[in-house]
Length: 216
Ligand code: DX5
Ligand code: ZN
Image (cartoon, rainbow, N blue to C red):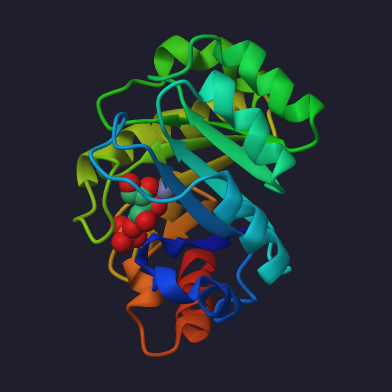
């Protein structure tokens, strides 16, 4: 299985509905929420997610790069997200938050910045539907893929297998035709791609090509 989730961070924000439609055929639409505190950039909030939900049939994969996700994540489920990812570095009570996201009907997911190890969180994995390993420092699209994250992807895949879990392993940052095969080989199965999709002449075709490469 390889899921391709285009990130609308690299889309034209004045034409979000059209840009969402341009990648129908993708598995999920990745929506980056930034608050200018957890990361030095500011994007969009709950009202935009509510509107996006109406603009596309593609399920929404929310990536919350914000402080106090314990307070905000449930509101993104109510806004129509099918999956909500919070950063463990920002969450006060990650287990409680994951359970609340699931109880409200969305997939619960937790993200790790590049310098955050997976090992302290091994026992939390059964509470999650997805784990996101950042392959750039969060905050901006178009950054170079961090090869040094490949061992962490590999170790996380081993932990998932060891516990016999079903959770998805997502990578986000610098994923492109040049790097997706390395991510897949290391054990990732959900691939976020911003500039590699929206920077292409034909975004829908870029999604198909990335999927074929990841599944090769
Ligand atoms: C970065 C965001 C990513 C971003 C990826 O902090 O979380 O989702 O859109 O963009 P690319 O694929 O261009 O690295
Ligand atoms: Zn993201």
